Image (tube, rainbow, N blue to C red):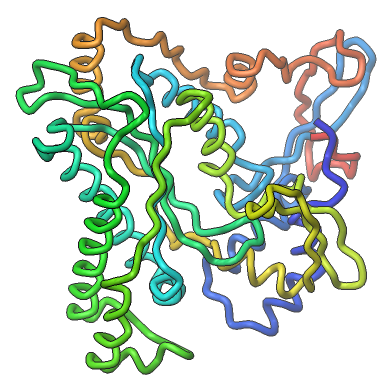
Length: 391
């Protein structure tokens, strides 16, 4: 695949040093910027490969493996998709999205780890409790949730995407109970329960001193002001979206797979960097049109860093019968009740080139120039020569 004309790393290299000097960034944001700047460059070292047929020589520079880097995590994403596809059951699946209001997003801006965790907890509790209600499905469901914090224009917009099978295990785990066709759970009920659970947890976090407030929200340090701030949110409608994917569960997995191991924007959406201005492509969901947006390089970097994950934060989580602690046993129960065999998940190859061949059929050991010869890795003393990067 050819290198994009413009990469996030190019923007960081040209404008990152001045941005870091002008802003007191936390260490993890400074680290991710440096990692992206150095990804697949001589700074991280690499290997020299030589074709035994046409004698073509090139360098494969190492990746930074930072989870915010648009060039990295491709194999991790492919492996994740393969695992999720192996867990699919022969039932209808639903794509459910939980979104917090702008007023809560403003609190999350200064308290990402705490509020993101509350978002996961309230979402999971909402789905699990309502699905287990005998007046609804009366089952134990299983699902995974993926955190997104951005919209197409890179503004701060925290929300969770959940992929949920249409049905679940009966209370005694001796039957699979199907959801109604094209319907999982009532959205209004989900929204009201989610709002109540989230706000209760947020108030508890506030009482425990886990929240911090700065800037325009500094006044919320006063308990009375905080209570007034939350009051209208207890009556407003919180957005929860649920719909069976028209293309089946694989479509949702492919959609989410573009974002599970990437943050905010891909290099393919970057169009130009001229005179300190970044132009990128975005989709306006109000009319479904692809449009171009131009912002200053400083503003672009600011928007990107809004979505830097807290250190060590897990942005993909699993619940119900897909919880990590008992997933294998519960999935076997589901397959037995649905009379479907387990998927044949191939063992992961130890060498990334063999693993890539397994997943894509593309042989990275084959010469990219002649397509005939085999690439042989050379052991060279001293620093790598300054050859053209063709990775």
